[in-house]
Image 1 (cartoon, helix red, strand yellow):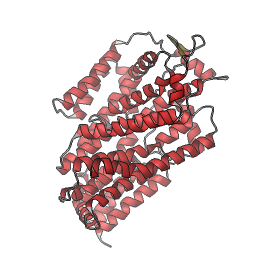
Image 2 (tube, one colour):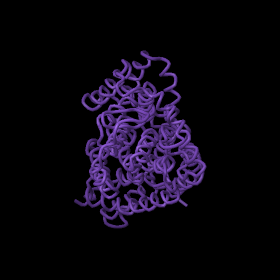
Image 3 (cartoon, helix red, strand yellow):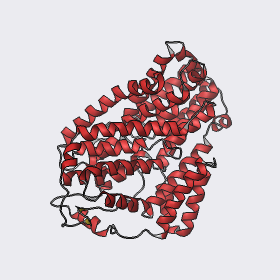
Image 4 (tube, helix red, strand yellow):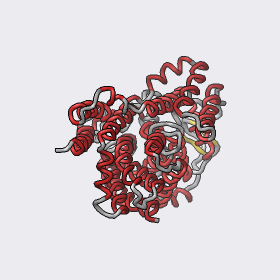
Length: 473
């Protein structure tokens, strides 16, 4: 067996182990890089360490640290309250507010499962109280989180853009971002009308009264989001058992409605009033997020250093928040990403990446190769980590894209990005599991089957659709 095939089989084995067992794939990938690099390629430890993505590591630490501060100092809760107040009595607008907030969170640096963990309990609480289809509401949250996930200052966007830049391929950061947002928004529109959106638009606004946060013509309970560590990364237990789902629900549930909702009432009672003005630190955080976008997009400064710098300035304002935020940095997610990137770097030094690209390009037509890669990304990501898929499959496609096959790299990268992330609606992914865990007033077995059916449809339909739209056309 050649060293190239050995490294490929090892990568496949990593995905299998990380899918079956609750082991961070990044840890497995670091071990794989060491074993394959030394035993199969005869590389020194120094050469293996040279594959460690230091710039990507700093980017991930910086933006997740900044987001953790925004979550801890109440900025996220404040923005949610403002958005809900803007809804007024328009019940039909609630799913769109949840979609927009989830997209905003991932766009400014939250890992997708963290955004879903924050928003899904709120959204599904509203669904239970106002008769909104819980499947539609949960899917709106997930598609919102995935839609904002490829902004230039996001986790997914940072991974994808750095890989493409390193390969010397043409890149359009905003194209990938808007394609992801557009596709997920289009799917959300279909889901909205398919699952009762017209009925919601005709539904009369609820009257005033009752407990919880009261807004003009709109009564509901809003509790502050759970502020614990961002534990819901895709590397941890993609195929969650029912026990883990119950634990996730108990840890992240923000509010419960109906009889017996004592815990929710207590949480709602402690929540800030919707009219409460923003604190100085919250305003400073919003300014910092805007500055992050301007300095990185307009002035092309390094996003990692800028994010850490803004985080330091916020830390000086509130050192106690900074201390907790350090513990809330998504270390498992970062371990996964940099571990897989290190292993892919070893494969690149071995010549495996070029070997795969040349081999695949010779199998069939370039368009069929592009479709095949989109399908592989979708199927693997439905059960494993989307970040790991992006970090491994895009480098494998680089030689194919550089070979002058006629496939537009910008369109292909956009198609691959969407195909590999939109499938996270599957109940076997963390996002889907979180929605299942927080659904209220439903038959859980029926809801699980609905998520599985929808996830299967998306996995089969999304790759050819994005391939046709962004690669063929």
